[in-house]
Length: 187
Image (tube, rainbow, N blue to C red; front, side, top):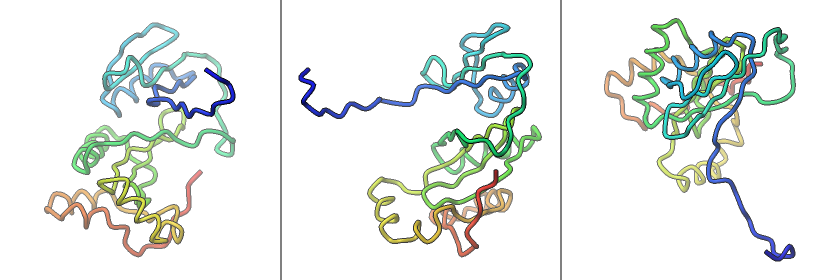
């Protein structure tokens, strides 16, 4: 290839992320539970976990003696996983709540309806759904100025959302942001 040519070459997908932990068994159990994943490979040092066709979406590396991270550290804030429907997201919320795994922050960002959880090491994991059926619809919403006025979103009560969903409230009403005050991002 001629180096003077500018060709855009992008990855085809995000493959996986790797976490180092001193809570190896607890972290393994948490990710298997939360994502309903299964083990592809596991020994005393390393675990490869996946929930789909990828050979591993999460790798856990057992490193004894690590210090806990400060909430004021720079770097990755969270990793997000998208569900196929609001029903799937709310079913997951109820399943995890029954296991005493509850979100620390529930927010309708506009583009997504999201629930944030902390794993045993304190890493933030977002479980979400897309609120728009297409990129064109989302781009139209961005151009409306709504996101600029409130780029973080509006908090919601997940139990109330579950009740409304179970009452048959239409999706378009369930994912409306409402007029709540803009939320702050928790650290």
